[in-house]
Length: 202
Image 1 (cartoon, rainbow, N blue to C red):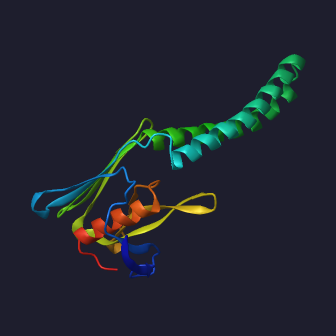
Image 2 (cartoon, rainbow, N blue to C red; image 1 turned 180 degrees about the vertical axis):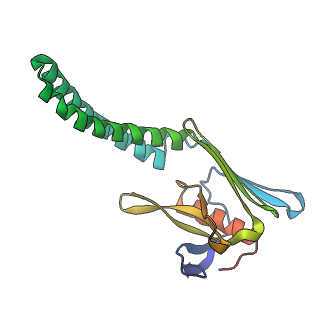
Image 3 (cartoon, helix red, strand yellow; image 1 turned 30 degrees about the vertical axis):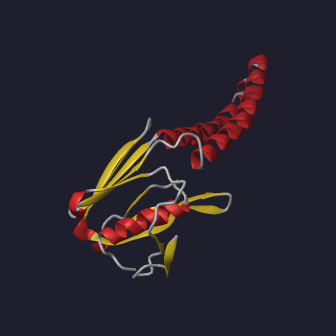
């Protein structure tokens, strides 16, 4: 599947894995298109539905909302029966837990229904994503790209860090990241293809 590891860290020790995966994983749903004349490559990550990372978040959200919702309703019924203002105070605290569950539910829906596109050309990298709650677009000029690696996204599921493709920018510019939630093999593959397109060496 891969040609071997260039190690972890990159040229300046900034972290990230430079593992070469040349071939698209067999179970990948990412659509890969090479433009005529080697002028560019495109990756389209379709809506994943409630599987993988999105499935974890939806299950977690339902579990969290189930517990916090029951507790909230129990306190609410008690407060309405006694009509004492001090019994309404715990509802403020418990509502915070309910909102956490709502937040995770929103994350799950965004991950499940978002569609992302990465376009790499000789001019630079353009990434767009659009979901029910959030849409974003960013670009990095080809001359500003320092390295492209697979690095941790900051999200951990079952003690395993989710990887993302990271575009490190020269001169202290803002680094960019995309495709969080794909499998590790897909992340390595996308990073390899984009890195090879720009002939960036580890």
